[in-house]
Length: 472
Image 1 (cartoon, rainbow, N blue to C red):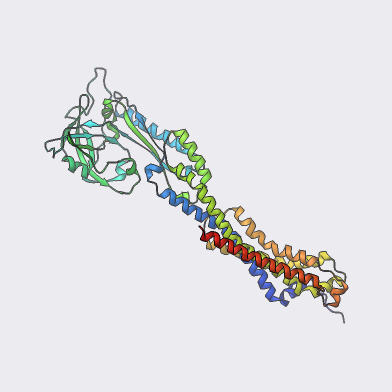
Image 2 (tube, rainbow, N blue to C red; image 1 turned 120 degrees about the vertical axis):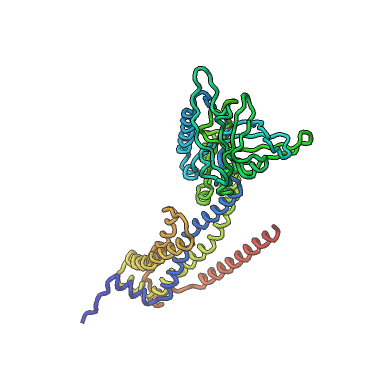
């Protein structure tokens, strides 16, 4: 009666079931190696990103946002319609500049902002000067003011229609008590200078501008980054001069339609900034962001401290990457060493069967391929599992390059098993020893010496690292 012939698949399955301890050891070593290799770059990114976000987070918005100051010419004779058109053109040009930013910086840029303000104008102190020697105002125009403040009393300035100046040069609306410029200011500022809602005062300069306070407001969000660019919006600037007495500056707001009136004394001051969202900097490429930021600064003639803060991070980030690399090399190296020992042990446990196959005519390619198939069945699932665990344990963005090494680890057992298994020979000594090659005294002595040297080197390395740490 003929005995059934074992197929390669059945032979592989029988060998895997014969020595489960070695199988578990190979799987665990592959799993740990893939897990460490998949988690390491993500861990580095998280640590470096957290440090980067922390360094940027210490800066205020006025330090981070690219900002520039200039002047804005308003045609005082063209009326409100032309002034508003010019303002919309300014906003469109700023948006175009934002769209031209580099790919690393563009996602971090919010809507650009532009705020206009007059020079310091002397103002009527009113019927209740409250001990103020000099009162000055700097009227600001911010189209987004209604979205940023909450009205406490009255209302915000309403749009007005300042008509173009006719040929005879009639005065502009706002230069007479019958058509005053509407203003709104913070509650604290109005209380400090004792300007009541509905009260009209004369603001200095040239022919003078009549203004009426129509409302007071408070910040809807006191922590809004806008207020770091617009200082003294909610609190007046007070200076106690030793000779002149108390000097007070306030910063009321007017509607953009009043620009032709506000510009009667000359160009208005223009403050422009490009708000930067610092949250995504934790995951941003520092080098690419720094390049784009410097190019943006040059193109827009703006000032920011963000590029200097990012540049200072480079040496610290290199140190962090080096330290984490050293820490990861330990577990990965141990896992690879264990994997090699497990592969060697697996071949030793199967040596008798492999020698018998070679004695019956099997080629080295056949025995190597048989072992390689076993390595694939063990390594690929273990590497996939290790990579999946690392991705779940260390969340964050994943690139294809980060997965090459962890997944390639799944091929390591196949390569090692195939290489070791293909070297088995059916010699007489191996057949006589049940498949195990005879070990001579010279080989045993060489192994003993090598093991002693490894232990000695490990002790020396530990002592050297410890002494370096104690010496700072």
